[in-house]
Image (cartoon, rainbow, N blue to C red; front, side):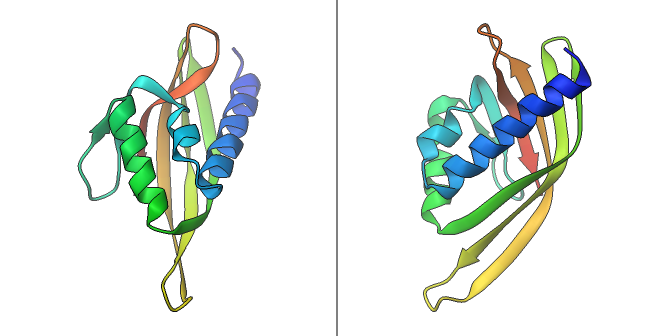
Length: 126
């Protein structure tokens, strides 16, 4: 697979990830992860496996985080593994309606699945 092909694929994954998160659909977010995936949240314990990742995103989305956006900076591919380096941003709105913006860096390692699709194997951000 060429870099241009994986770039298109990961841009699509990013769009689906953001859409599912912003639609408050944690099962759709979790479906974008490999069954052996690990999520490494900034300042928190690592989360591994499909059930734990679904639980993590369910709780995270319930906190009222809105307007999540992933911005790709770089991608690469080598065989059945690909990576993305990028930025993320989101906001939270408190009970008084005050909006707080936050953002950071992200890195995602993807693994090609047996059906040819790609799913996140490791997802880390700060």
